[in-house]
Image (cartoon, rainbow, N blue to C red; front, side, top):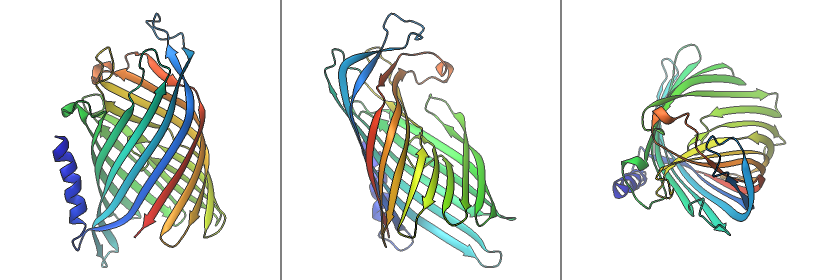
Length: 314
C-alpha cells in the first residue's frame, strides 16, 4: 500500500513534464521548538480531571514540510467570463520528537504525513464561485502500514466576492479520522482594508490536517509585510506505539505569533516566531461512537517556536 501511494505521487510529478500540467509553486516550511518538559497525566485519575504533572523529561520538537502545487487544467470562457480550473497539491510533513529523560516512553520519535489533494474551482453567476477538494493522505509512524493509515478529506466551499477587497465563503468538509465520515465546517474570508492592511480567515488552511489560519497583515511595501496570526491545527496519525493498544494518535497544537515576509521576483521568504500555547498528544480509538470518550492527554509545556518558510514561484 505504501508503494502504491508513493507511486501515485511519483506519477503526478512525472506527468508535470507534459504540456497541460504545470508546477505553479513549491513551498518548504521548517520549524523548531526548543526542549520542553513533559506534562504527564495522573495514572490514578480515571476521569482525567486532575490535570498534569511536570516531569524532568524533555522533548525537542522539529518539523519539516514540503508542498508542491500543480495547475492541471485551466479553461476560460470569454462569452460569460467564467473560469474552470483543476489543481493538485502534493504535501509531505515530518514531525521529529527528540525525547530524553523519559522513564516510560510517551511519544514516538517521528510522525509522518503525506497527502495528495485535488481541487476544482469554478466561477458562477453573480460573483459566486465554487470549490471542491479531496485529500487522500497516509499519516503514520511507518512501523506498520495498513488501511488504518489512510485518511480521507472531502469538502465543498461556496465563495461570494462582494468587491475586489472583500470575499466570504462557507462550506462543509467530511473526514474519516474516527473511522466513519464526520462533517466539519469550512469558512474563508479575505478583507483588504485600504492599501496597508489585510485580514485572512482560512479553514482549511494550506497546512496538513485540520488546520485553521486567522491572520492580520500589515503591508509595508511591495517587498515586505508583517502579520500576527493564530493557527490551531489537528493531525491524526495511525501509530503502533501506545502500550494500551489505541492506534489513533490525535495531535493538537495552538501557536500564536508574528511573521515577516520578504518578496523577491520568484521567491518569498517568511520568518516566524510564535508561542506554542498548547501541544497535546492523545491516544484514542478510530471509532466514531467513542469520539467524545475521555482519554489521557500527554502534553508538552508551552514554549517559543521558530520557523523559516520558503515559497518558490514558477
